[in-house]
Length: 218
Image (cartoon, rainbow, N blue to C red):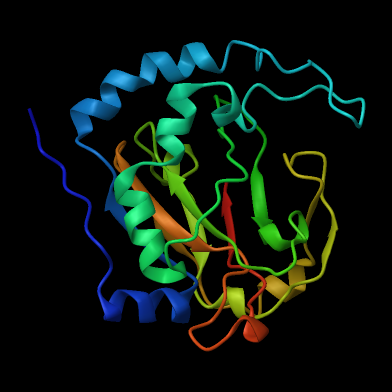
């Protein structure tokens, strides 16, 4: 059996996270463990979120890939992996709340997840949010790996209506992206994760919050 002990971030890694708006990839668990979970994840995404209603307060269907940690022990486990949580607390401190989780189930020909900042979808106050992007399958540039624009978390970009070929409703005005730094592609193994700033506080104070890094998986 492979022993996997969670490790905290170093001070230099924390500083890099605040500078770039993301960090990783890191191994989340042994690859053999993730391979053993793939089938269960596939089965989970084919079921409804029992015992919750099929429609939410807004009248729309509740997606099978959204917030499944509320009804699935597997989804909760993947959302609270010790290695992810330990590295998050190196940045935020120990007082963490899991409030959102989402499976991106992208088959052949699926719509693009466009460039975006999560703050445009999650206008929480105070804006103290950090995310982990976990690869369940092997991801490369050929099958829509995570792409990040370093340093883009320091400025809130105006978002407009997305095009029909995009999976999201809004994305940044294109000319604002051309002024940003070149993007970095993270080809993750199927057991690894990246941390991303989604309106996470700066090292100084909560009054200096950033709006979140710009990222996509196309």
